[in-house]
Length: 228
Image (cartoon, rainbow, N blue to C red; front, side, top):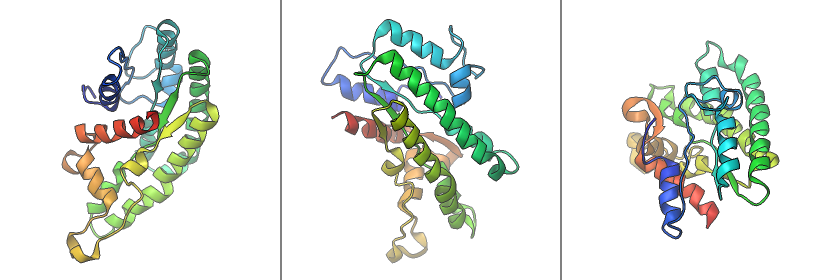
């Protein structure tokens, strides 16, 4: 939730170093899904019917020079909270693909062909299962290989086919797929994916999937690299 050190805030500060005239408009909302972003009905209330309609109205009036977007994680998390996630994941992926394509096409139409739109894939907070007993490492790896990795592949494909210029590869920035073990450390060794999720989010200390300030900084840097 509410922070002045989110990735958009930190990206804005970095870009403002060379252009002090830049302003930031944030329309993020906790628990938003691709469906609520597109159709409304989420926790946040806007003057327009949905988060997307609010964004499109703002774009029409303010003419931004850059649009960043991340959406879709809450769709998957809602499915994972169901008794049988394997049953809802295929339809969830299909819904995200359909909704995100519509969202991106509307954003591209609104900003025109010249304004960059940069999407984002996701780090994997579920690698924190590494610490959940003897089966933890296997569970952590399975979440990455069967859910988060394929979901990020889907996001990247939709973003690039529906109007985004690039996708910030946060998955790689957090080394979410790296389960390499330093054998010289013995039982104390944890892979980079797990070390990073503990360092950059609240998962290992409070069970909270959200990034801390350092984690948001990593995400901001991942966007920034695409703009330089």
